[in-house]
Structures are given as C-alpha cells and as structure tokens.
Image (tube, rainbow, N blue to C red; front, side):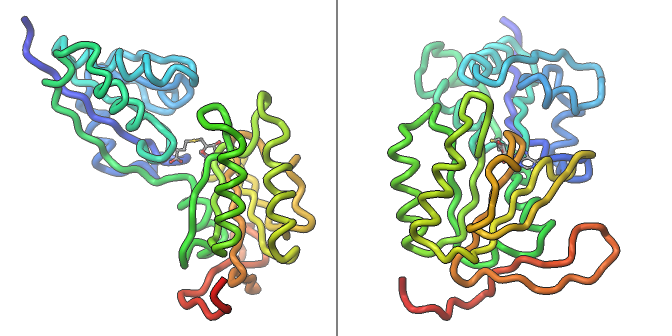
Length: 260
Ligand code: SAH
C-alpha cells in the first residue's frame, strides 16, 4: 500500500490572482492533483499536477474522488472559487467524510484554507456596506425549499440586517431574484441601496448601485453578488478617477435606529 497522501480544501478568491492568498498559492504549487469545477481549474496555471475537472453539480462525487486520490497517496487540492467554506466544497467534503463510505477516508489528513469570498470583494469595491451586522443567503433553491429562502429573507429584513445574496439567478432559476426583491420591497424602505456586483475582479466586472425600488433583476446573472442595505446603509459622494462610479455605499459602525 502506498503512503497516505493529503487533502487540502482551498478557495481561489473571486477573481484575479492577487486575491488568492499566499497560503493557497503554496498548496497549489505542492499539489500532485487538482480536483474541482472545470472553470476554476482553468484559472490555475499549468504545472506538474494532474487535473480532475468536473461539472458544477457533482460536488459530492468530486469530494469522494479527492478522498480516493488522497488515500492512494496523492497530495490533492480540492478547489472552490471564493472561500471554500461559503456555499462551496468544504461542506461537500465533510458530508462525504461523514457518510464513511470508505473507512480509509478517515485516515486522510485534511486541511481547509480560507479564501476571499465574493461578498468581501464586492463590498470593498463599493465602500463598506458590510460594516455592521449582516447576513448571507444563497438564493438557490436547488439544495433547500424556496419557502425556507423566503422565510429567511423576511426575518433578515425584519431584523434589519444588511443582506448578501449568493446564487441570485441562473438559467434554471430565472424568477427567484425578482421574487426575493418583491418580498423585500414589501417590508423595507424603497430607497434602500442595492448593489449588483457582477464578475467582481474579472475583465467584465460590472457594478450597479440602485435602490430597492428601481433595482432590475435582469441586471444580475449567475456571477453576480447582490447586497441589500439595512435602514442605516447610506450613500456618500465619491471622488476619484478609478472608474468605479461616483458614490460610496457604507453602513456605519453604530446602529442608531429604533430597535426593529
Ligand atoms: N465560495 C464562493 C461562492 C460560491 S457560490 C465564494 O466564497 O465567493 C457562487 C456564487 O458566488 C455566484 O452565484 C455569485 O453570487 C458569487 N460569486 C462568485 N464569484 C463572484 C464574482 N467574481 N463576482 C460576483 N459574485 C461572485
């Protein structure tokens, strides 16, 4: 039997290489095998490793493959975009481990390395919208019932959190973002700032700052992160030549509204 390998779960950050941590760069450089969704693996320069690309919908089988490779002695990097613990591969890996389908998996040394999540990059682009309490939801109802999404949205709005929405829309889920915005419109000030941050850090980045009243869900696609302000989130004039617009969006450190 060959010596046991290892399995490291990493996130590449949301876009450019400079948002990939030095720790993750070291793991990728030392890996014999990369396992992940094809387009993420395409972002990693060719090196002396083997690549095991796959479709986006097969997270659990990807995690099993990564474990099998580690059992056979390979040094495996299991790759996500952003942070690997935010709607990504780290949980899929632990689900596979918990299933215990192969007892040898329990012996594999596992490590999870953090990455820059899309909401952090999107927030930094527009200022500091996440500066006070916020909550994060995936709008995808592939892995949970839509009623749960709506209930969580309503309660988040009631508690006056800033809300970050991952997976807002896709070809298979065209109406969910519109429905979510309608729910929020029924509960929040129509002037609440909304940020639609598409492909942050990529060559086709596009950031729209709107209000809840005029925000158009058609502006979003599956590479968009949506931020919805709390009652305290506000706009400030922005000077600069960086081409990133003429307003900042930020949420102050202190909460001065009445208790919601
Ligand atoms: N683990 C990832 C999230 C995976 S879920 C992370 O921590 O960022 C996929 C969702 O992430 C997309 O639907 C989109 O909402 C968001 N996302 C990923 N990369 C993005 C980017 N460069 N710009 C904006 N949103 C992004």
